[in-house]
Every structure is written in structure tokens, then in C-alpha cells.
Image (cartoon, rainbow, N blue to C red; front, side, top):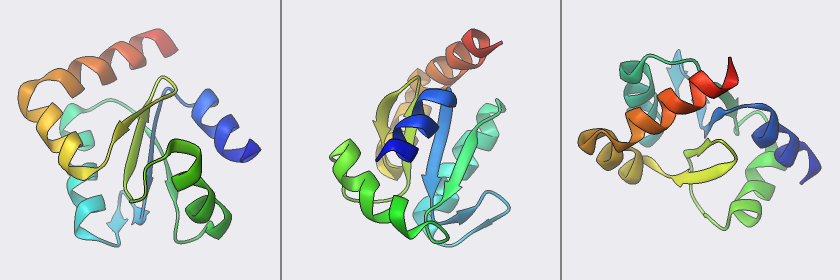
Length: 104
């Protein structure tokens, strides 16, 4: 849990996903990466398939059972459906851009 907390605190935008942005391992993670790439701001990621302790601990930490999980400025945004909907309305783009500016 301490590692998860440090990752979330030290990265203004972090995506916990299956696979990597270059090679997503599930459709939901692929859609999340597509949205984040479209926004065009840097984001950290953790491949939960290579980090079993994070894969098992993050659902309890954030009280969210599935992956991907997007965290912005220490707050859980949600999974793939929420990411897509918030991007569609422009809300996610604004949130990510504000986090990127604050991190500079």
C-alpha cells in the first residue's frame, strides 16, 4: 500500500493498466491509453500484470475493483467507461491539463 500511495502522490497523472501504452493487454486499457494519448499530456503508468502486489492492493486502496484506473492529482478518476465519457465532455482533458501545468 505504501508503494501505491507514493506512486499516486509522486505522479500528477498515473494510469494503472494491463500492459503498457505501447502494448496494452486488454481493450479497456487500450481505450484509456488512446484517450490519454489524444489529450497529449505526459502521464505515468504501471503495468499491473508485471506488479502483482499492486494488482492485488490497488482495488482495496482506491475502492475500485477493475483496471485500468486513472488517478489525477491524487484522486481516482475511474476506469475506462468514465475516462471515455469525461473525455467526450472535455472534463478529463481540462483536469489532465491542469495537473500537467501544476506539475511544472
